[in-house]
Image (cartoon, rainbow over all chains, first blue to last red; front, side, top):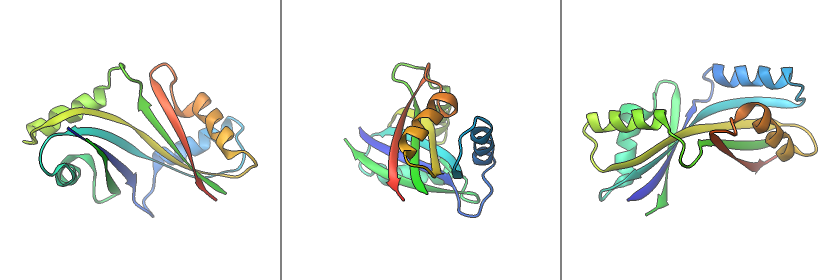
Length: 79
Length: 79
């Protein structure tokens, strides 16, 4: 098993309503000096097979990320 | 502004229904050899102030994470 970490974030320039909501909530809670807030997903996978990185890339293309509005990054963390 | 990355993941031993759903979807799409799948959040913050790491920790305690079911990790990525 290879451990893979996929990070999916809203693309630059794409509205991030979840981030905006959290930004507003932090301000209402009294936190000052909060700039940009962006929220994405961290997906930890254990994969078998000879090329887990390419498998993860295909998973991102087909299921894990929406390429219209999200960028993804794949890190191989080891076996 | 200091750039902070907060990672929030379901705690060890806590059911992760989102991860289970994605696991099932990957299998139905024909991906073999998928082991554990766990899904959490990546929150990128820009913070002003003298102790942005402590501010982020307080934000996790009060808003960003649910300590009953989630662990959080804070990384300071630089200014």
